[in-house]
Image (cartoon, rainbow, N blue to C red; front, side, top):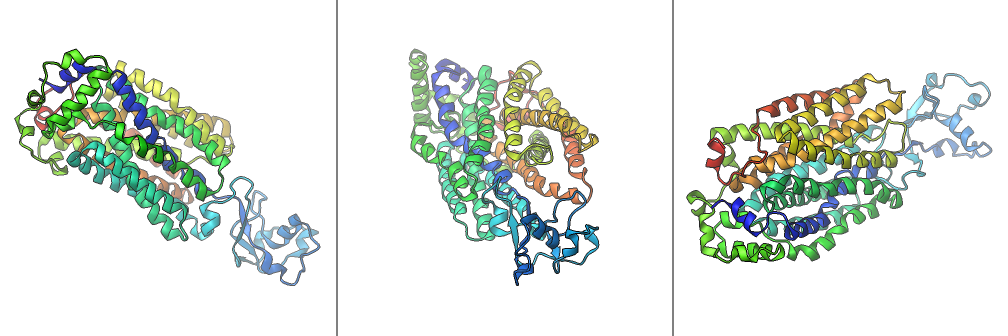
Length: 526
């Protein structure tokens, strides 16, 4: 007997599966809150040098604020005051005879900076002075966090295949709460970076374990809708984040606020079932029967389970998996088709994640404030998921993945060609690109879980997520290349999206195909 047949008997998508999704939404809302948090806590408000050293003798006392800035700070080509330079001494002649201030002697800021707190009351830049020559450290905070996410993907992929989905889900809750709260009380940039690294590790456990639990409890006919529903929490939370950040515009309480839902997740964890697939694959038949019975009862299918005893579940998994063997990441490359699968899913994940976060972490330069831009970016994701759902069922997994990735790359390429002063068409095309990149992310989670066998599914998703997080970690740093050539980051994001999209054509289709249980299922023609 195949597990798919057994799951159909007890109800492949009923009240039990809906309750699982509802319980997993609670911790999952913290994912976009944290993954996109840098857009707000690492925002750099308008700033200029602190000019108090030039007013040591009170010589600027009778001037208005605008006049004080005029004689103290050079103007840029667009007429705004420079952020990182000041005059070595007051230039009073500029009040009556305005000339090109760039030709006057200037020095670096001598006594720190003054910040415009009208938009953001407190951020990392204002707290740790991450501006001017330290500006890159703002982007580094995102990279350090996503390196933690990358490491967590490898760790939790292996741990949850070894010790179970449910137990490791609680571990990921506790890690995220502990280091998330600790990061809010950081007293230095180094401490903050370290705390965010470990927060990223915990959040990855929540991400990959929750999606696998959701898919492993759904039957073939409902895997698509289950995967899309569980991913809708990301879009809704992405829309909520700018509102929360606007109301809590101080980075320390904001971090605590976005971590708070995990307290409720800890309290409701006991009602989340372990994966029956994993239990059977690991020979824990009594526990598997217990959860299958609960599923049958909730879905009003108790009569279908009367003839199935715990010992009969041993026939669901073939001999290789009853041996008690423990699988590792090395099993991803031991056989030819598994090697090909690992290579291609890694490339796909890199392309999807690199592009998605390249767009998501760039919410400036569109003529809108960062809160509105973030809200629009979140709002486009819900219709994107509808498009993804229709494509996954009508076109299949493979062509949906290819189409969304290539279209994302095309949209990014178009924004490179549109002049920056035409902010409205640039914003429209960027939002469309964001929508297609979200659709590609929706596809890749479901597609990957269907490609890997049960005995290696968590390892496979963990490895793929790890490679994807390499792309995520590089995205903030690639954005710094705009100082070399302004369109260079967009050109790189475009090239990666399109090339990775076409390579995805080499993967096999999984639409309406039984999930592989063992490595042999992958190696033979399905």
